[in-house]
Amino acid sequence: MSGPVLLTGAAGRIGTVLRGGLPERGWALRSLDVVPIPDVRPGEEQLVADATDLAAMTDAAQGASAVVHMAGISGESTWPAIRDTNIQSTFAALEAARLAGVPRVVLASSNHATGYTERPADGGLLREEDAPQRPDTYYGVSKVAMEALGSLYVDRYGLDVVCLRIGSAFAEPTTTRQLSTWLSPADTVSLVHAALSAPAPGFRVVWGVSDNTRRWWDLTAARELGYEPADDAEVYAEALVEAHGEPDLSDPVHLRVGGEYTTADFDAENFPA
Ligand code: 15L
Figure 1 (cartoon, rainbow, N blue to C red):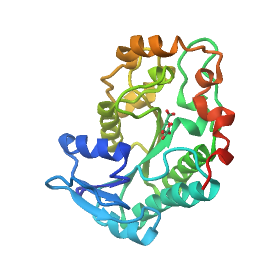
Figure 2: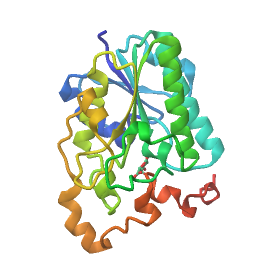
Figure 3: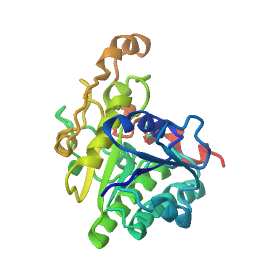
């Protein structure tokens, strides 16, 4: 199917990275956000619309070849905010794809869907199927709902849905945890490109992490999709370890998938409306 990729959350942190990199991989973009994008590129379509609005999303999805859904609150917040923004927008992205006949949806899930899962005691790599959905926050619950909705739309309506359990997608790692969990900007583009390109993926859930020396998420499933990570957070290790010390692997921040999200600091009451 030809047609642009509908990118939600296009003005956000990851959306901006994808707007920079996907066109070079041959993907025309229809970029949607609630706020105008300041630097629309040649050939890029722009839509100012709310990703939670099903009618607007259905209009936006007409003629698209895929939806890449990055819109939403990107960390813990109040239950009403998470429910009304994250869960509703995921529903709208999938339902709009179905109504508009768009065959593929790529969803920004998160490691926080599995946050209370512990790193393997034997020091091995954690596969997606061995990381049960154990959300660490209301935010994590919205990512569990995202994966569940994606599964439903594959089984019931035959869409292809790829859920990316993204680690720490930032310009560079800034904590020792992120030496394990970092997903570089270039690898973010590579991963979404793979999720858009893989033939008939059906329903997939894959970790989104760079090829970090200290990673403990298995990349086999992502590589099977065609993901070819190029970066390793280890180049930042010396400076980060000097500043913060070697990570204590028995500390919940380093022991559990969700890191600091699993600590009392992330109780929702600490996130006022
Ligand atoms: C996420 O899912 C968040 O969007 C991001 O802000 C970070 O907290 C990241 O996870 C992480 O675990 O580092």
